[in-house]
Amino acid sequence: MFVCLCNGVTSQVVTDAVEAGATTTKQVASVCGAGAECGRCRRTVRAIIEAAGTIVEAKGN
Image (cartoon, rainbow, N blue to C red; front, side, top):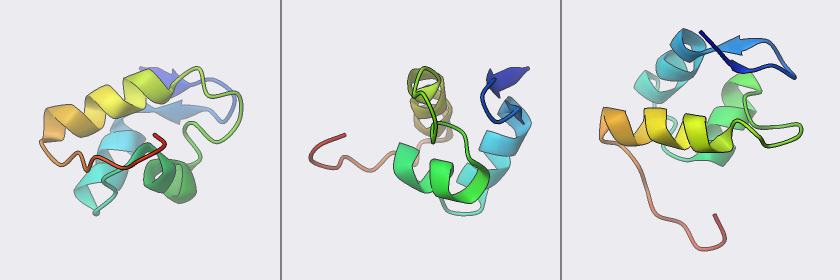
């Protein structure tokens, strides 16, 4: 399933980024581009991070 339409990023790509160590939406955006443009997918990206159990709370997110 596509998570980020702006950059054509799928849920598997986001999951791979999280498994590689990304723990914030900003880190995922840096790794694969999801959430780097309009931001509409950030909630979904955050849900994928939370599902992996690796979320890191950061001020300003």
